[in-house]
Image (cartoon, rainbow, N blue to C red; front, side):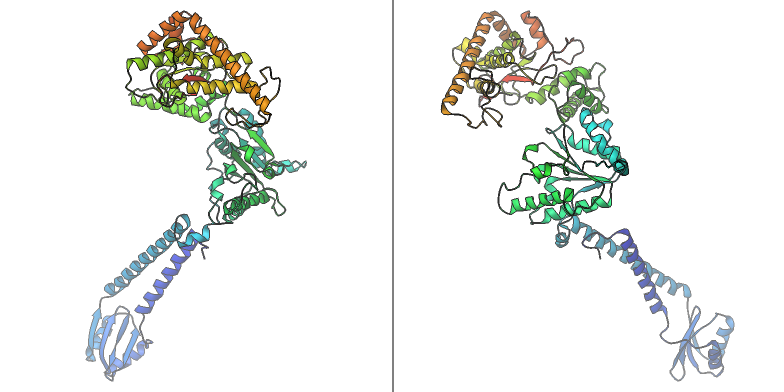
Length: 634
C-alpha cells in the first residue's frame, strides 16, 4: 500500500476512521441483546397472566425470565406504572443504573481509540525509519533519489547575497528568465540551455550561486551531490538518476543542481570492474536524461558544479547537455570588498576598520577564505573580551590564514639568531628589489611549520609577470641561504623549501615561458609545475635545460650575495632589531633602515597607502635554520 514509504496523512485518516468504525461495531455488538425483543403489549399480557419470574430494568430495556424458563427482552419507556405492575404480579425486579453501564462502554471505546492511534503512530515511525535508515525495508527504497527538495518559497538566497561574481550572474540571467516564463523563449524558436556547468576553484561560490539562481527564479530546486548517486549495488545510481528527473519533471519548471559532478561524470573507459561499471552506468543515465532518444520534454534546467572540468566525459560537455560552462574565478579587489560587505552584516565592527584596505591586502583570497577571515577576526575579538572587531584582529586573522597559527617553542639564543639571520636575508632583498611584491612583515616567532617567516603581499591584482620580476623572486628566495653563508659560512636545513621554490621558478622560465637562450619553446606541453613534468624532448635538450636552470640560480645567488654585502650595515641593524622585537611590520622596517617606502599592507587607517601597482600571489619565505624538515610556508 505504501511501496516502502511512510504513509501519508490521507492514509492515516482512513485508518483512524476504520478503527473508530470497528470500535462502534464492537460496542453495538456487546451492548445489543442476544435475543429479538418482544412487543410492549406482550409484556403487559405476560405481567397480567403472572408468568414473569424475574425482571431487570436497564434504562429503556426490560429483560428477564418467565416461570417456564424462557427469557424475554423488551424496549420500554421507564415509568412508575410498569414498576407497580411487576411488583403486583409477584416478579423479582432489579434495576441497573443506566449511567454506570453507559460510561463503562464510553471508557472502553476511548481506550480502544487511543490504542489504535498509538498503533498507527508506531507503524508510521517504523516505515519512516525503515526508509531513512537501516532495516529490512530499506532495500525497497535504495533506488530512490537522495536529492533534497526545496519549494519555490524555501530558497531564500538571492543574487544580492552572492557578491563578486558579476560576470557569472550575467550568464545566468537567461536561465532565470526561462524559469520564470518558459513560453516566452519558444515564441521565436529560441531554445534555452539544457545544462549549465559552474567551474572554478573551491570556495569561490559555485554552490551559493546555484541557490541564488533558484531563489531569483522562484522555482522548485533539487540539490544532490555526485557521490549520492553511487551505491554498492550495481544499477542503483542509474535508478536514482531516473527517479530524480521524474520528480523534477513533475515540478517543472524547476532546477536540478548536482554538486561535485566529477564524482560521477569522469571520462568512461578509464578502468574496469564493478565500481567503474556502476559509475559509467550512472553517467550513461545522466546523459540519456539530459538529452537522449527517450528524453521527455520539460522545463528542467540542470546546474552542476566542479573544480575538475578536465576530467569530465566529452559526451557530458557537448551542446545539448551542458551547453554553457561558466567560470567562477577568484574575486578581484572590487569583488573582495563586496564579499566582505556581505559577510560583515552581522558582525560588529570598529569604525576604524576599512573594508577597502582589507580587500587590497587579501589578494587571491576566495570568497570562503574572506568569510573565514572575518570569522577568525570575530573569534579573536570575542576571546579578548572586546565589544567590537578591531583592526588588529583582522591583521592577526590574515596572518593565521596565510602562514598558520603561532607556536610556542623553547629555543636557544643561538637558534633565534640563526632564524633572524635567515629571515632578514629574505626581507632585506625583498626591500631592495623593486620588482618584487611590497614587503609586509617579518617575524621569528614560529608559525605553522616554519621557525620564522618573511612575506610580501600584492596590493593589486595581476595576471602576468615579466622575466625581471621572476628573477627578483628567485633572488629573494635565495636570500636566507646567502645570509646564512655570509654570517656563519655554512647553511642549515631551513633552506630546502627556498631552493625548491627558486628551482621551480627557474625551470618554468626555461621550459614554459621561453625566457632563456634555448629559444621560445615550451618543453612542458600539458603539464604544470617542475615536479610533475614529463619528458617531451631529447637527452641532450634535457642536459641543456639543467645547465640553464643552474645558470639562472647561480647568477641570482651571486646577485643576492652582492646586495647583502653592499648593505651589510643595514643587515646587521635589521637582525638586531628583529631579535629584540621578534616581529617587524613594513612601516617599522622602512623607518629603521631609512628606505623609501612602497605600498604598505597594514589595515590600519593611520597608515596611508600609495596608488597600488600590479601585484601577484603572496610571496612568503620562511623556515629558518633549525626547522626539522627544512620546510617553509609557500
